[in-house]
Image 1 (cartoon, rainbow, N blue to C red):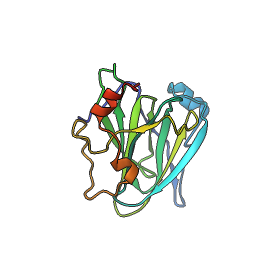
Image 2: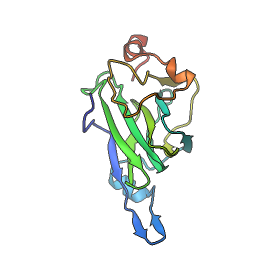
Image 3: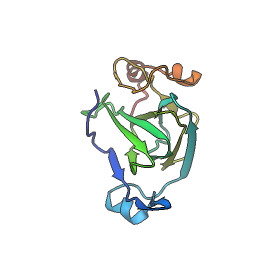
Length: 181
């Protein structure tokens, strides 16, 4: 079930300054992030390029957990965050939003969420995301993008999925693992 708000997720709308050459935007401003109650101490910036119809995710990390700020700098993505905090009133619910360079939106995703996205349209998408902790191969986890318990409405047909993502557990298997948030 898609919901408009999940506690702790935040949509960030950037100020785009347009002129006849294009636009300028501050993707990160420590003071403005602090005013919004967002973390200002990030460990790493990541960049992925994905082709049309690709779905990446749903991924999360534990030990150490990671929060992230996701934005799209070219192309368009349908960005999805699933609440996987067992005791949360919105456990198993998801939030989705279109991110693009043109709409000036980013999404803050705290630890305890599985994250994924699909590429919309006919152009590749460049996605940047800041993470607040280091990567841990041992803590790397995920949930199947097409889990019927999540019922995510992906707006593409015939998605391209990595072998790793095709083999991720379901939400029920995540619960049964007892290795949960």
